[in-house]
Length: 124
Image 1 (cartoon, rainbow, N blue to C red):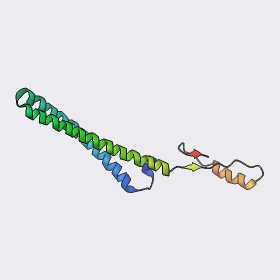
Image 2 (image 1 turned 60 degrees about the vertical axis):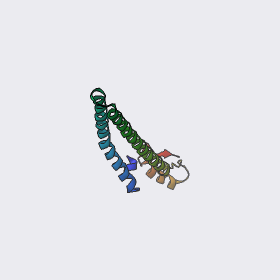
Image 3 (image 1 turned 30 degrees about the horizontal axis):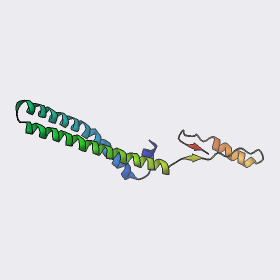
Image 4 (image 1 turned 180 degrees about the horizontal axis):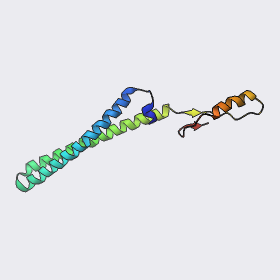
């Protein structure tokens, strides 16, 4: 969620949103189309030519191969973008130990202690 809130490149977010919408529409369509092709192939095997049945099976295999290829390429692309974002957008908070000798450091540290730390932040 932090990546989505980041005011970084908007085209990456649009690409993710577009791929999610395509995935939500294409998945049921590919499933229904594959089922219909296989159902037609079974009917053609029982009642008419085997050539049409083989063609429908080949169509089903091609359909699912293209669908799986697109899904894997899209998923890999977005994982790579996310990992690149994680490498370049790390949040680090530097905590300085309290010093009894310097009053101004103690006062500035009181301001730092009041900051709420996020669980994803690294303490150095």
